[in-house]
Image (cartoon, rainbow, N blue to C red; front, side, top):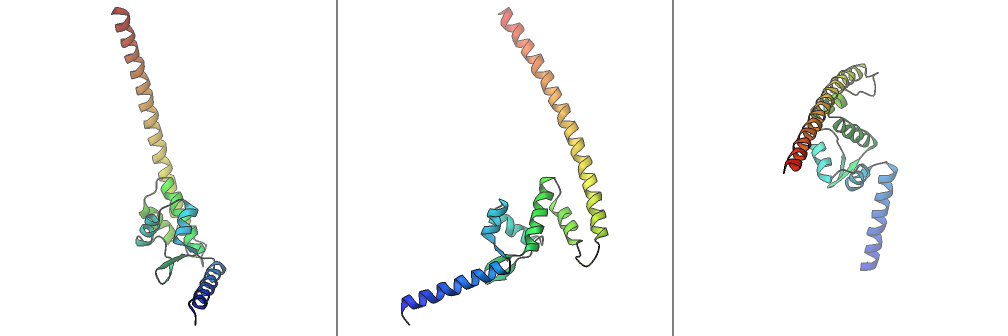
Length: 150
């Protein structure tokens, strides 16, 4: 077998493997990271924490539709301020063979608590902004008085 023939065979095997992965609707780690705007390190971290569980083909991580859906929910949860522990708890309650009433109740309870927490934070921020405005006005007035006196 010539080197050129061997290279062609390897190329054919690789193309067939890539087609099989596309047919199985799996995504490689780099593609998933790019698709969701996260780092490879973040994906590995989520895997270490048990939030996602990619298949392995040698050292290659292959993410299923389920992993992609879970990642989307992880990122949403992080965006709205949930801890990874809360996100994992909600995700782990999912059972495709049931109506998921427990998961929905836990999610609603955690969502209500997070909503209330964010509202309180927004109120505190609004108060701080008003205090800063008042301080800026006072300092500006003092500076203006010094400028006129000097």
